[in-house]
Amino acid sequence: MISQPLFEIDRRKKESVDVQLYNTIVQAINKQLLPSNTLLQLDTLQSFVPELSQQRVLEILEDVVNAGLARKHNDGYVTLTRKFPHITYHRLEALHDILQSQYSNVREEIAQVSITKHYPKKFKDAEFRDRELLCVVQRKYYVLDQLIAFSNTYLPLRMFKKIEKVDFTQGTIYETLQREYPDYSFEYSRRISSVIPSTIYVSDVLGVTRNTPVYYGRIHSFTKRYKQFEYCDMYVLANYFTYSREFSATELKKIL
Image 1 (cartoon, helix red, strand yellow):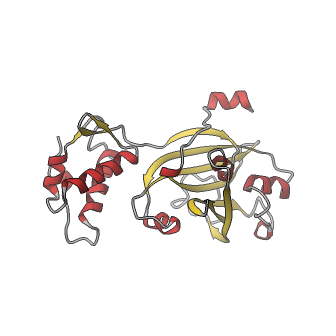
Image 2 (spheres, helix red, strand yellow; image 1 turned 90 degrees about the horizontal axis):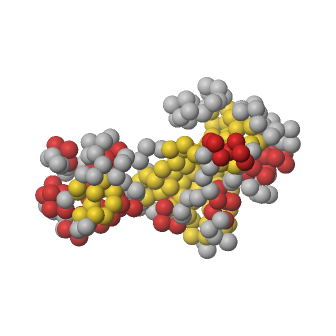
Image 3 (tube, rainbow, N blue to C red; image 1 turned 90 degrees about the vertical axis):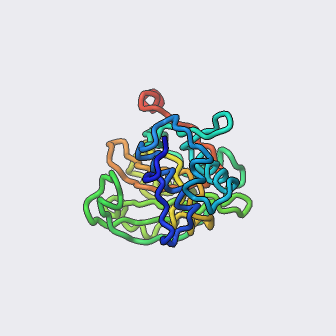
């Protein structure tokens, strides 16, 4: 049962009512205020935003389905289990390689290389030292000149001396690191992943409207000695990508 306080729309906000409705549905599912198999009734939702047509509310519900938070059921829409990130293990694969498995003409571009500091609140779960210097490499990925993905990779300067002078245009990031730092053995990535609505930052970089569904991956990569050498955020337009090649921890032990 959907209650009025749960779907309170504030018309004084700068956000349009349709964006507020979408965000409210997403937050309610993620916070389990709407448990799995709750029917999202079109008439009930429209009663909260009478200024929107039924067609616009249907489009919002389709966006919720595309975000992986609901499914179509008969003539209605039913909520799914909330999208808590799940952990999967992978052999080291650069985002370029992952995209290349679905597209044969992926073009990779270095958008910028800069220096920042590690802050625990910003880099969740990263095993780096507080306020230590990190090299940031931002890459953008194009298919037929369409920007479909980007990634921000953070590498600690204490592990990679003079990394700001490294040429990252000659191969994938893992190929570059293996070439420039042959003493390290780069082993695997732990990827925490989900489909999310794009934030203002992500939509600005990708050139899409806010709340467009994107595949988000938070990547932690480790050496053979289980020392983290990479923290990465990657974003891929969900309509252009189907994620694959996932390994469980048990399967990883058999592979390595």
